[in-house]
Length: 337
Image (cartoon, rainbow, N blue to C red; front, side, top):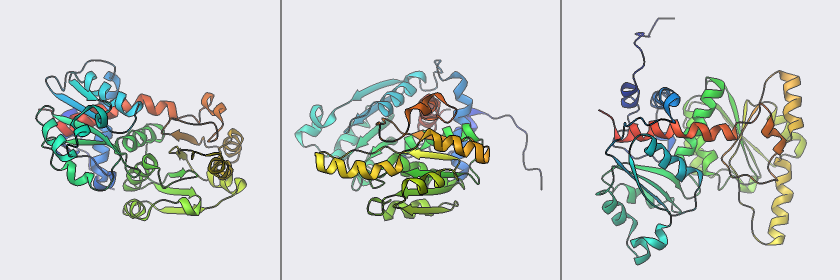
């Protein structure tokens, strides 16, 4: 094996430049290479010790956030990241009602106008088809903060960064993405896309009628990691599959309205419930601590809340890692000189 390192100390500006994100939009993580993702994570790691301080790397720059769907964590962490970088935030939390969208202005026109005010835009929208044409009209970089049901790349990135900090590698790890409904699991799909790019193996488990959409599966399979799909497992089969993995990711799911629909859904969901007992058995049998991740918010039918107080818990740690990751992302997309 040849020595390839030049042993130069890591420099934040160099790591950011090597992401290749300057001036570009962020949509699908499958568009980024393994090297580009690693440079972004190294940049986040350099920023992390100072992520509660004022760095002033974005002093004089403006972030505009527009969320056409509800958000707590994504909006707050994106805006906090810009403020910690010394930048300014202008925001509209309900643009459908309070912006010119309420007067039927097209999204492309809105983005073109906002581009004159801001240096970068954070956008969440219910559309996941024509929106990709709309954002190309913007003259500043656009961060997808969640488009429709299919893509949520910033959540995927912070989840990847959490995995990177927890395990120290992506190569050869097995990550389960599981839910009673994977058709609307945009955070889990973005996580899987990014992990597959890095050589991790992805293990899907869901009902056969609510599996990962084909177009998303094609993007996940374009990575270098192996991909497995498991359908309609019973509770015992699901537990045994969990024991083979290093991380289990729960993308969250919406419980249908109406008592009959809810009862049917919850009956299926019980097979995907994660017990602390399963994780403890895996620890005894294999010696490994399986990490449990969740995009939040959670509901009581997904996993045992006693996991909160154990080493298996990663879902609250994900929140802490979201700030340095989003700080690095903003700097990479806007650029620092």
